[in-house]
Amino acid sequence: MNDNGIGGLRRLDVNVTPDTVAAIEFDAETIAGAVRRLADEVVRDLAGEPFVLLGVLKGALFFTADLARALPTNVDATIDFIAVSSYGRADRSSGEVRLLKDTSESVEGKNVVIVEDIVDNGLTLQYLQRLVGGRNPASLRTCALLDKPYRRRVDVPVDYIGLTAPDTFIVGYGLDYQEKYRNLPYLARLHDWAFAGEGRE
Ligand code: PRP
Image 1 (cartoon, rainbow, N blue to C red):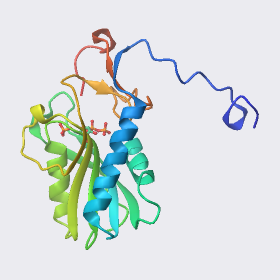
Image 2: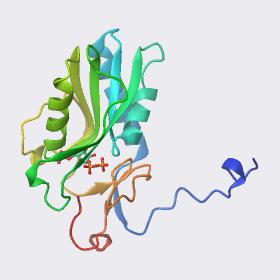
Image 3: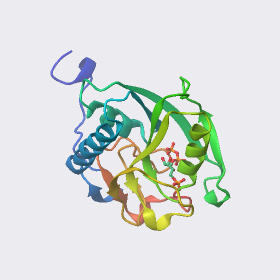
Image 4: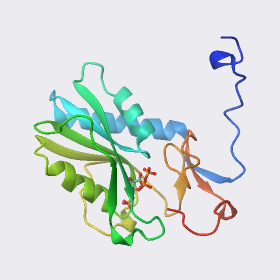
């Protein structure tokens, strides 16, 4: 280990914004503030009960991690992940959601908080609520960092919402475009020319 960074690797400048980024919609500080508020709301409602944060991969990877770390240390919380993907990226209207990875632990009898990065048309969250809700959890809540309520195609309840997203395609903090940009520490809009053809899903 030396001053160049982790494991002796030379650390690149993390502050360089990719050329493809047109604007930062929510910076890291704004995201952190929303995450802290959501953690407070979850803890307030669960009032001393043990609960499971069920992160939805891949998008909610960082959000789940940060939400968990924003909880008071004496909270009885566990973390699990589920991975889903919408069938046919170009045509999500079918509403078919594919289960890529199930939970590691049973949710039966547990208080579950589904943790999503974004609720767009709502089909993914609806699928998850039906799936998890059908497994007899003690309670089921939903928490999303980002919401696009004006895009909703199904009426799905979201108990905790961090930020209302603009009506534009955004990447970063777990959200991708063709699997890229998830690692950005902020939420950003891309230049139109950054999209290779169609299929921004
Ligand atoms: C994204 C996002 C949500 C879902 C929201 O996941 O992470 O899970 O879409 O969209 P909806 O409300 O319109 O259903 P995606 O299927 O792109 O997978 P990813 O999380 O691995 O990027």
